[in-house]
Amino acid sequence: MSEAILEVKDLCKHFHVGKNKILKAVDHVSFSIREGETLGMVGESGCGKTTCGRTCIGLYDKTSGQVLYKGKDVHQLKGAEKIAFKKDVQMIFQDPYASLDPRMTVADIVAEGIDIHHLAKSRKEREEKIYHYLNLVGLNKEHANRFVHEFSGGQRQRIGIARALAVEPKFIVLDEPISALDVSIQAQIVNLLIKLQKEMGLTYLFVAHDLSMVKHISDRVAVMYLGNMVELTSSEDLYSNPLHPYTKALMSAIPIPDPKVEAEREKTCIHLEGEVTSPINPPEGCNFCKRCQNAMEICKSKKPELREIEPGHFVACHCFNEEK
Image (cartoon, rainbow, N blue to C red):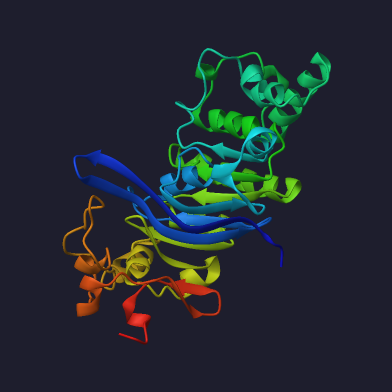
């Protein structure tokens, strides 16, 4: 088994959103990602997935906790170590329309990292690298001198992927890279990412809310709810044996492309009721307590810890706590 390339320990990212108001976007989250694997991170909008990914690679300063990349604290890096880290770690953003500079040609967008990190010794080598990475993502050299407004959403996301790959990274955070694309294009982009991972030995943190795509690309899956990680296990185990009440509700909501099966399944679908806890100054106890059918008295006062219930299967729920 390969070693962990990224270790996240008790990470918190809080935002001050008013007088005496603190939004706990990421609250005491811990996990690790092994070299060459894909960790999927899922949950509904506003659960802290993107904030967690951005804090892990230093785009946001942490509030507390620790993020280690190859054993070194991401938020303490300086000088040459920080430059090397920025080359090693890249991010592919959710919106291909907003993440690319409309005033730059595709060639300049792809070559930006190459220029910053001095990866080409000559103009010819620079040009060859641009063409190579465009070809790698399914584009060609005729696209190099065009501007991004001339491309479709799927093509723009391919340009974003080429830009990230151009600095030869080891670890990539994929922030909902397919959510802004047509359904017909989504599978193409995911299959491209899987192919590139195998060819280049990449490690992914795949942030998404499309559970079907997460199952397709991920080795392990972490489920987030209002800034907390509530379940972490292998992709196969999560879909066959979800344990946390929130995960069960998510799984029951995945649509099945068969009208008859879907009509039958609707009878057993878990409909969450109750009030959603505010992430601003949340009360003590479990954030899911108000929506949980299995809530107990301890859930209102004590926050559950992420514990290993089965080998490799971690859950944060008092239902599995022997001390309850």
